[in-house]
Length: 109
Image (cartoon, rainbow, N blue to C red):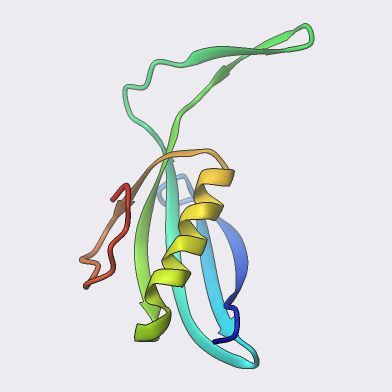
């Protein structure tokens, strides 16, 4: 099986003040699926101060909500792992699903 490629398109939503990501998955020249994820600040979060050099700033915890996940059955698990990896790299503390994930086992959801 060829590796799955993932393209990420970030968007800012004025409606709910979130950053949304649109993911497109391809396998070779064939599109195998799409997904949409919204990111939010965690409510009632205690900001933890961080310091770099001589600047102190408040770090806000973020979470992600998977709004849509439409991929070909045999690629579901690999595509979801790619999304999770991306979200952890950009600092999402929590990942939630805004819909029912069929039979894909996802750790942390």
